[in-house]
Image 1: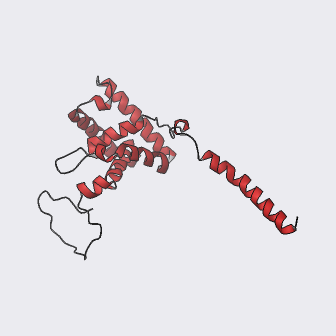
Image 2 (image 1 turned 135 degrees about the vertical axis):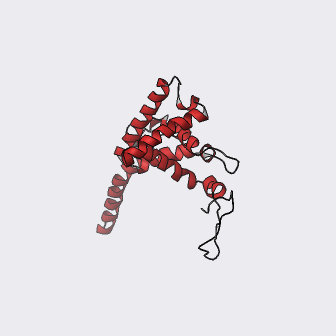
Image 3 (image 1 turned 120 degrees about the vertical axis):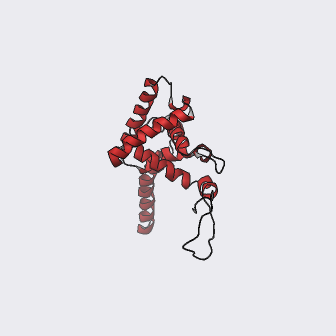
Length: 181
């Protein structure tokens, strides 16, 4: 064996030894994945119901449920938000569940649309007083971001032009016309 062949073999063995753990840990089955910091696996559905209450289906456009916003919110929360924000939202969702039970309703999704809107209105008022430290500020921001970056939000809730023409800085909106996305 020449020195060159020995170096090639050693490099291949060392590279394989370093790469194997990264490949094996990236291949966990779905049932072995755990929820992130304080979040429960059923929080995805609750986030979806919150988003659908904030952005319901109207005659002009489909709502958050049609856009699949709950899954996107959960993904953004678990993968892109800090552990502190995740814990804040997890605690807020537990508080929301407790509030529903205290009002005699089994869960948030069992409430009527009017009851949901009233409850989220109360939470939003508290969130505005608390500022950015309230869990609802994070949840509302994720809902809006997930909806308006979805295909439905971009093409049906707002006016979307894939390739825009020339710049026109001042275009009046007609009554009932959606904003430009």
